[in-house]
Image (cartoon, rainbow, N blue to C red; front, side, top):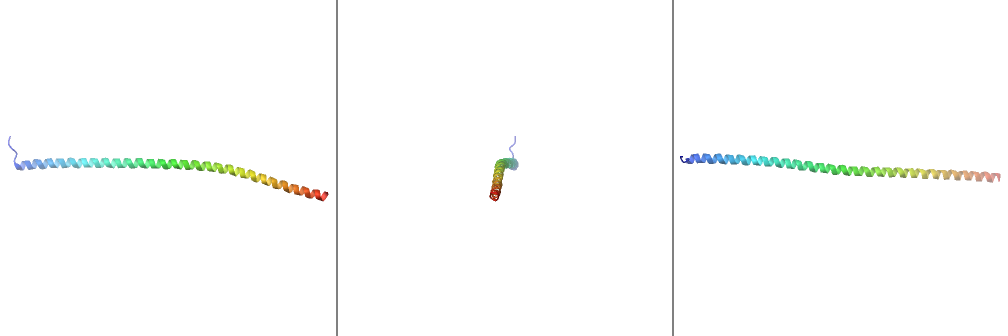
Length: 107
């Protein structure tokens, strides 16, 4: 075998350097692609967790408001009963006054 000439050695070295640079670029592209995938997955998971938390809090708030509405409905029923009793007492007093007036007139 013959020894390669300096010019041939330079060409071989340049070719090897070019292959190494291409491999490095491919590796960087792959790493960047993986990074994009990681960022996408991370943000997707975080957003889903955020929406789940918001949805859960919304369900809790709606449940509490429903309970408050039920309590308000019960209080309205009690107030209606109290008002009915008060009206009955007022009517009874008026009737008693009229009866007393009639007794005084007849008496």
